[in-house]
Amino acid sequence: MAGTPMRELPQGITEEQLATYRKMTPDERLSLTLQMTSDYTAWLRSQPPEVAEQFFAELRRDRELSRESLIRGLYGSQPLHREE
Image (tube, rainbow, N blue to C red; front, side, top):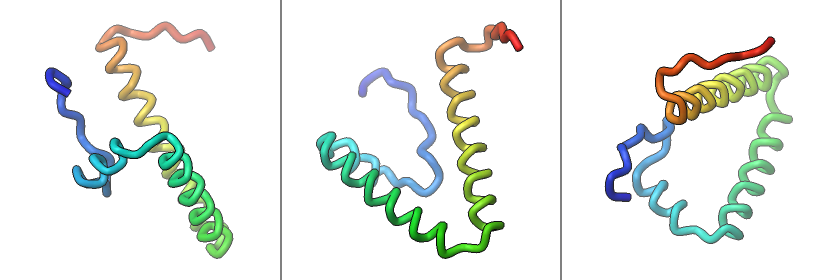
């Protein structure tokens, strides 16, 4: 999109893969998501518990980094008020 700032691609994703993904229909995206979920589930079940725990720890870390990036994009450097 014109005028959209360039964002860094997630690790392991190429421009070609991203372009292909963007051309997919919602049904194709859902199918891809379900296939990846099935593949990862089978792989995780074949791994020792330590590997599965590391996988989920990295997933949580990536999700938190994504959330922080989204918040920075929405609010800039404004301090956020959090009630705990």
